[in-house]
Image (cartoon, rainbow, N blue to C red; front, side, top):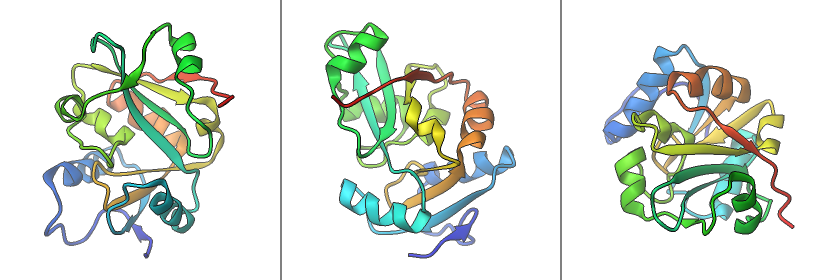
Length: 180
């Protein structure tokens, strides 16, 4: 795996969703590094990628309440266990579970394995609330997929929270997860 500055020079074989991510980031003037790789749909594969990117490894979980009326994208450090009860208490939403892939596609235009904050650019109706574990904001950089699981980006954390999220009209809710 190699690191490249910015978007791919040749977009042959890339999805329109991925290309739209690069177009959007470029329109905001955001700088990012990119690496291309085999499909990364396990945390082990993500660990290898994140060693190349040298960033905090994040888990991105797409969740919903039992009634399927509230949807959440949770970003948290990969090494921290996820405890539903702990998060539910903080956001006052009982019975959280993983949302179905159909909702992920409908709201974020992504599929399982490629869950990323970049999908929020497709959530024009703000159906998905971003939840961010406070530890995610501590690093200078963070990594994410450009809505596909065969590429990964390294971006300044401050750019994500101060430029990208306001541009996609999503206000993150900070949560404190102990994993205990």
